[in-house]
Length: 275
Image 1 (cartoon, rainbow, N blue to C red):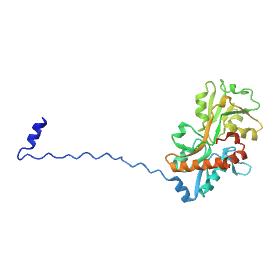
Image 2 (image 1 turned 90 degrees about the horizontal axis):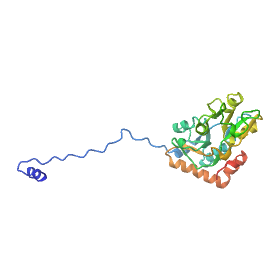
Image 3 (image 1 turned 60 degrees about the vertical axis):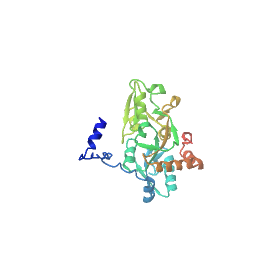
Image 4 (image 1 turned 135 degrees about the vertical axis):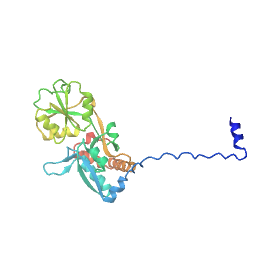
């Protein structure tokens, strides 16, 4: 058949075959948005926007006695701003909303003891870890229902967690008999406990230290086998490798020159630091 086709084409007066151009490669309907150069933006405006949760005792805490911000991550945020030769601007948020702020560009970084999780890694990038903590329980000294860790997951017990924290998915998976109460701002876990709407609440090393330091009614129950232990890091926008590298470089130096150690000692978190 191919030979016959060739003979027909070569006959006198036959029209040469028409070349059909190959189809052009399909182009995307819209070009993907360019990832902003966060480090250049920070330096050009002379300011770094830092997401914090101002109720995080010893980490990023607004002291009600003088309205001043204090804590390990407040010290570290100021040290990062000093390294970049810019001013720090603190943006108050919470764990249910901080990723929205990072994605929207409201914050350049979250420095508020953010625990690393696979769910969060789908929305933000993380620095190297600098702190770790297991999950602790807080109840009242007068409680007869909760006297040991084994009393927590029992029928009739209400366990409170803050919305958006690592404790929320952890306790959803772990509790078999107790009821989970997810507390959203402006409500707090301790107010739910004091009001009798919760029997116990779950938090980490730093926050539960606040309870026994500030409230004489609070009692902390230590977890067995480092229950729910997680690593903490700084959260930044995804897709910006130079900015992640800069934050990691800052952490590396801070661990070597004693900046992190001094902040940990100042705020009682030395035992939780990761080097």
